[in-house]
Image (cartoon, rainbow, N blue to C red):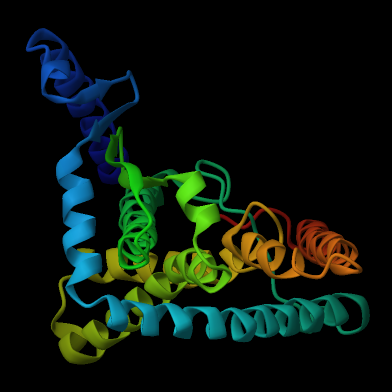
Length: 280
């Protein structure tokens, strides 16, 4: 415990030293946006990278996007089954119910687990956003900005497509753009499984802990992000499709969103009542 706290303190002190040096050297001149808790680097080089990758094999990326759209239905079905089954167990067979916990640093994420959680979250979010950016390029949708985020204990990325260009694209193109991020996370989880299978017990302990977090967050982000609740990607997909059904689409969209929110909240509340807060 003491070692983990010392490491955490060292990272925080190192960050603020970096921030002070960056201010002194005026690194803003090189495109960095310096803030106390994070640094954002926006560059057209990142846009160029996304365009090169997306246009390398656009048909292949569109096939991947089609797979992502189809997987949306599988993911929604799977998480619906899991949540409904867990709710049933809470109500009728409580000893078999599983806890559903929000991930709150310092509350459900132990202090000693926080660096691993944040580092893994950075990888997972970066992969997710890169997926969106590459699919935009494959569909001919301009990316207004692409950025790499470096924060106190983590990193990540963000892609901002041109909203007008997204609206001008066909419905299937928009669906692929929304869906690809979660598929990228599922592929990441499969890669982690392959690494564990290949490396086995020969893997260093620290790498095993980190990859466990990457796997856990990749699967959870992929599944939750596909829920048909706006503004999640799944919610945007549902809205895109149901907008073409003016007679009943809006009603179905709201019913699905409220239904899934109620399902998640009921699982969370019953978990807190039965198990309390379970730190990871």
